[in-house]
Length: 233
Picture 1 (cartoon, rainbow, N blue to C red):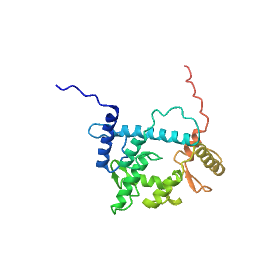
Picture 2: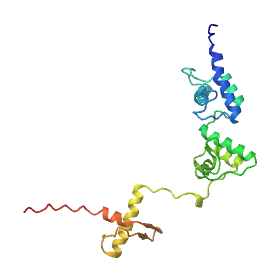
Picture 3: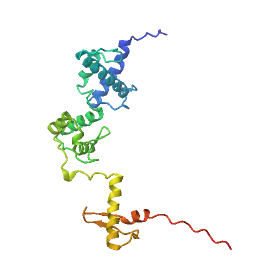
Picture 4: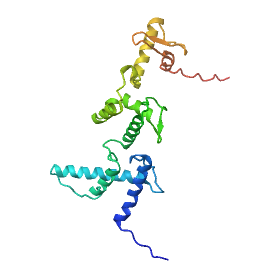
């Protein structure tokens, strides 16, 4: 039996890097989700750690450029490793969440194949990503994107921000709901002279051009009546 040959640190680190390259060759990118594996190796977790190390290295470079002290470079990604990963996929470590970049990449490939842009949930699911839902989310949440993300969506994918008539009505707060119910009860009282509102009644508030259910509110706001104790004898 041959004795085990110890693997030096550099050779050991090349094992997950080779697995990452293999995963990228199969999937067309290096934007692997955290649960991704290749030949039994947890490529997704390894890449997540490499991105964290790359961001630390970038922070160190920025501090040095500003003339600020750097406590330690431990845990920062070596430049050689970063170049190796960029050679596989230049967008492997985006400035925003990797999930966003993965959906952007898959949508771009879909369009480059001459297919139409998916615009709704369930229209196109690829590599586990609902690209139609992603496109819809970008349009509705346009103001939440960075200027670079907006440019990528608009210029590369042809995605435009949603029009006002396409946006869902904003969710009202509890305070807004209480105020609306109060107006409905007030309007009912001014017309009927009491707040004994039938439970199935729906009060239409003309000023807001929408209907509010005044019954449950009117009944719930009435003080609870004390229970009468049964008479003895």
